[in-house]
Length: 322
Image (cartoon, rainbow, N blue to C red; front, top):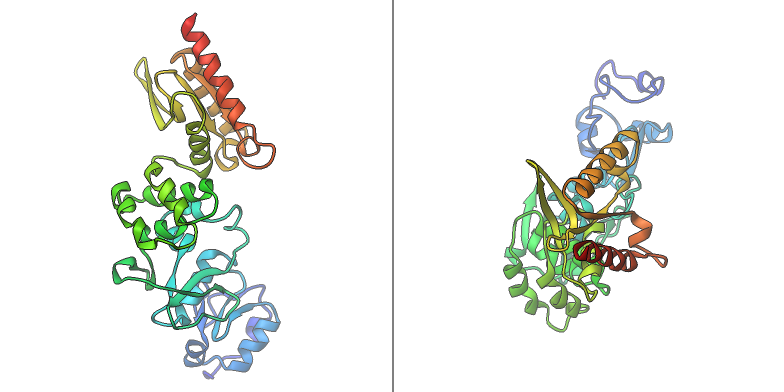
């Protein structure tokens, strides 16, 4: 313990700050604490007092840091075995495919998908969702000191799901990173022959398109593609009188499009006013039929996206005939 340090100076604080001799914006290890002169028993006392959290053996972090995917990954980075690999949606998220996290996972973190090579068993702690997996060297990359699967290998893993819509959502999100082509993705599918749900990957890979900017747009595009109407395209450019806009999913020949309204970007007075002005321009000046849709329209038992698309196509055709 360093001369002059006294745990009582911190116990009186609402949260740990500059006087604490360890980082307050990132996790630290027991060994780092001991080297800084903070004995083990003080760490226990600070944890009991609610000033520290102790999420995994040998790692502590100030309680004011959120329990997020980022903070969990930072904790694991300090103690993970050298051959551990972050996989699936967390590997994609760490490399920029933010929409791979589950709804509200940025607010309520889930265990990090972190696997060991075949024959090494699994990690056993509450921060990791673990198991064994076989990797090639080309499947792996390193981001901020953490080994993880490349966007291509992550796509090959997340594309092997039971249902086509979440598989295509993941493929689109990873393709959007610009690290692999659809042709490269398709050429790797046979590596996973006879593995679970590889038929989903084989079927969905050719439809991968990173121009989709959200999972909702991907699902709208997929549902539209399976209807007996002219096919859709993501992010259709619309130009009129010197102005340019992009429709989430649409068909330029029909001049019909669907806009997916996510809550983060399309609620609140300012956002709603901007949307209304944009839709009015698309409908009046550019002569498009535009249908805004929300999450309940696209997902779940009561989704009505098919009917919305079919009705929009009918209205677009009637307008053309008139």
